[in-house]
Length: 79
Image 1 (cartoon, rainbow, N blue to C red):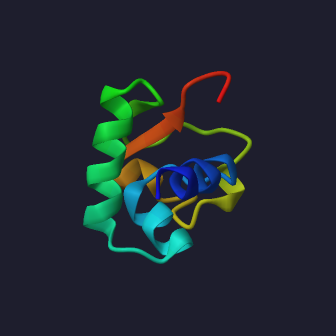
Image 2: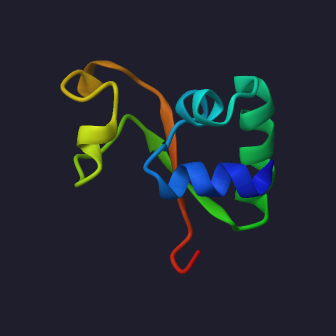
Image 3: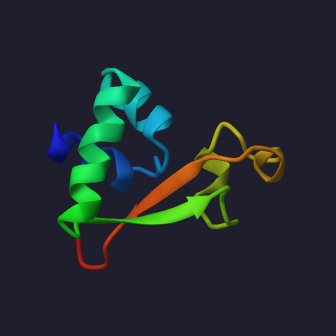
């Protein structure tokens, strides 16, 4: 599952919910796997909300993300 999470993140998914939908698993499983990957230094927690980037157009929350608080994650550089 770790590889699937990394691949989903490379395709622009940054939240556990969107990653879970993309790979077809329970969001709680993705959250648990992400916490392990954060501890191992594979991914980095971005914090709550999202910042505008070139991938915003892929986000289903584009335009309303400032109103919603959620944790997002990104791959560590080089991955």
